[in-house]
Length: 333
Image 1: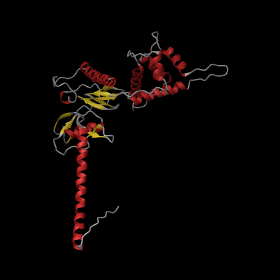
Image 2: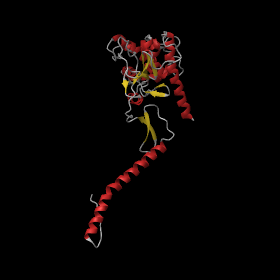
Image 3: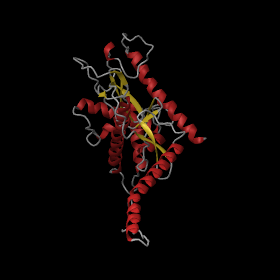
Image 4: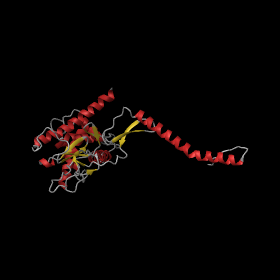
C-alpha cells in the first residue's frame, strides 16, 4: 500500500520543504497513536482486573471477550533474592518459585532463603503407590469389556442374557448374606478373570497387585452413594454401566484445586493427588527434613508418629471436602 501527500505552493522550494516536513512527522504520529492504543489497553485491563485476585505466581489477563482470567505470570522481574523451594530447587526469587509452581501444577513452598543446601545422605521421598483416575478407568473398562463378551442375544427358542442379568449373576455369587459387595468381595469378583484385568503400571508385580486393590477401592468410592464402602446391586450396576462417564475429581489444598497426578511435599514425604484424594508416603522424618506444609507451633525437633501422620493426611482430605462443599453451595446460590 502506498501513501501520497499532496502539496501545493507557488514556490517549488517551499513545496518540497513542506512535503518533507510532513513525511518526517508520519513516524511520530504513528508512535503517538501506538502509545495511546497501549494506554487504553492497559486502562481497560486495569478496569476489568480491578477486583480480581489471582494467587501467587498468577496474574490477571483479559480474554478476547473482555473477561478476566488468572494465568501463570509470563515473566518475573529480574531482581535476585534466591530462595530454596520445598522441591529442593533454587530459584532466583519468590516470583520465579511461584511461577514454576503454577506452570508445573505442583505445590512448591519456600523452604528457606538462599540457595538449597546439598543433602549428603538424605532420605529421598519416594512416590506412593496410587490408583490414578486413568488406572481406575482402565480397570473399569477392562471389566466391562470382559462382561460384554458374556452377553448372549435372544435366539429363536432360547432366551439370552443381557448385561444387567450377567452382573446380577456375579453379584449374587460374590456378595455375602448382607447382599452388598465390600472391597474384598469386589476384588474377588474382578480376579475371577485375572488375566484380562491385570494392570501393569509399575515395574514390580507386588506394586501392580497393590495398585489393583487400590483401584477396586476407587471403583467403590465412584458409585458408593451412601458412603458405607459397600455396593448394593444398583450401585454395582451404576459403577459398571457402559454408558456411565466417571466424573473427574480434583484435590484441594490451601484454597487451590489440583488435577489428578499433581504432587506436593509434606515434610520428607511426598503426596500425590489420585482420584480426588491426597495419598502420601509415611516415612519418619528427621528434624532437618521437616519443611513444607507443617504446623509452625509444633516442636521442630520432634518426629511425627504414625498416628500424627495419619491425622495430617486426613486433614488434607477433610480440607478438600470442605472446599468442594463450598463450591457446590456457591453454584446453588
